[in-house]
Structures are given as C-alpha cells and as structure tokens.
Length: 163
Ligand code: AMP
Ligand code: ZN
Image 1 (spheres, rainbow, N blue to C red):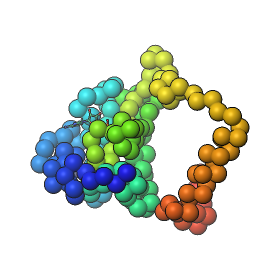
Image 2 (cartoon, helix red, strand yellow):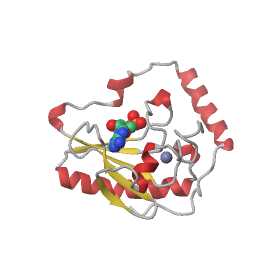
Image 3 (cartoon, helix red, strand yellow):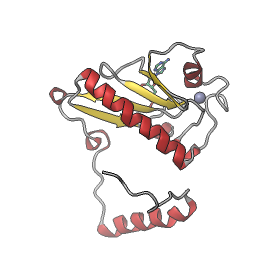
Image 4 (cartoon, helix red, strand yellow):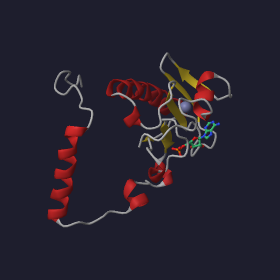
C-alpha cells in the first residue's frame, strides 16, 4: 500500500500544492497539521476534503497518533459542514489504494452532506453483500486476528473513551 505519492514526498503532488497554497483551493479550515477545502467536483454542496499537510499516500503510511489527529479534525470540520449545510446525514469516506477508488494519492477524508430525499446509498448498494459459509467467515476473522501481530498496535486500554 505504501506506493509513492504522485511525486514521492509531495514534490508534484496536487494536494501537497493545495495545502501549501501553491495551487488555490477553497479553504474552509487549517491548523498546524491539517488542511480542509471544498472538493472541486462536489457530490453535494459542501463536500469537503480534509488532508494532512504532510504527504502520505494511505493511512497505513501514517502513525496511529497522526491518524488520530487527522480524525479529530475530521470530526471538527464535519460538525461545521453539517451545521453549515443543514445536512441530514454525512458520509465520511476515506479510500486507500486504486482498488478502493483512491484517485489522488495523498491521504484525504471526504465529508459529504447527505439528505433523506436522495434515498440512502449504503455500502451494500455499492458492493453487494457477499454470503459466505460460517467456516469461511471464521477463517477470515482468524486471518485478520493473526495479522494484528504484524500491524502497528494502538495504545490499547490506556486512554478510555470519554463518551
Ligand atoms: P478520491 O477518488 O477519493 O481519490 O478523491 C479525490 C477527490 O479529489 C475527488 O472527489 C476530486 O473531485 C477531488 N479533487 C481533484 N482535484 C481537486 C482540486 N484541484 N481541488 C479540489 N478537489 C479536487
Ligand atoms: Zn501530497
């Protein structure tokens, strides 16, 4: 998954250029770490992208704390998008890799205002539900669990949720 970005550490990367101001973007929020701007092809008015200012291709190329910081900002901007657009719902989408539909190879989180009148477009609608025998499901769960050993592990149990 850690294919280079459109130009390694962001040399020719479109979103690096937007974050640095080299290419204009309709900025809605910025702090030391993240930049949020309107999508140029909005799926609904207010469709916003939140990106880390530092180049990374997928979230697996970022450390867990950095992903945490990114999503703290996503939550913040999402509330403003929801209130600002009076959206009835929000789809928050983040694609990693071409197979998942990632076109721009700089991590970005879509915040898309949604409305009941659109009819709910669920994940099942996009991919279709895959029915599998119980045995296969158990096998998949166990393969994922086994691979947790090779994944960057979170500081589990140290900080409890506040809600
Ligand atoms: P993805 O398909 O998840 O990689 O999404 C990339 C998104 O970037 C698409 O929704 C595009 O419309 C959006 N995009 C591409 N170029 C620009 C740009 N110059 N400014 C704002 N959004 C852009
Ligand atoms: Zn970049």
